[in-house]
Image (cartoon, rainbow, N blue to C red):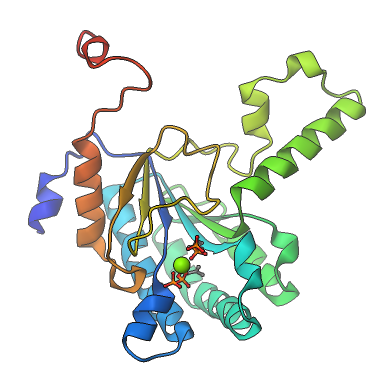
Length: 249
Ligand code: IPE
Ligand code: IPE
Ligand code: MG
């Protein structure tokens, strides 16, 4: 067994890990290849990390696969990514199911091409009764899009008389986010040496521990995940309190 894995305290695992899978394009360029070659290899990392999380019995894994802003990339890359998404889902759905993994999608599904939406819906339905790892794919997702959407839907309910302004509290807002039903991530990992959130889970990451690594996504493997979890386990999460308050419980 891996030495890093042995060091992990299994009683103190994050329930929810969120990852910004970044660096595919640079990884490919560094090898004189096309950006799509990087995305293609990124799928192997997804497989490996999903397996790693399932083995550790992590409850939720959210992967940022495509942002609202990524629609503005060159057309060939957007189409390539959509095709890769569809072929990957088709190839992996059986194995997700065998491993008791439930697939979820957050994001603006209406923006996706019809063939992609259909493939996803089938996979969502196929895995809906699974009780192991919840694999949440953020697709055509951004935090600002999600918050805007929530505000609009809340306003609509008020207008319809189903909700009063006084009733709106933090629980109400949570319910209107795409992630209602999922706990907030305790650990957020970003690969490839960028130190930003890039419109990911803006509301949900309020108290997440952030972990940045220079490793490009196509090179990211279970060992790198274990390092991130170990780093997380060495942090003191104070939630605004003092260290002394935490010790005295
Ligand atoms: C992340 O890799 C995957 C997506 C955003 C779809 P990038 O494509 O952003 O790769 P870099 O950051 O340009 O290297
Ligand atoms: C964030 O990465 C989105 C995904 C990983 C899907 P980007 O590569 O799009 O983010 P920026 O442009 O570096 O902020
Ligand atoms: Mg990038």
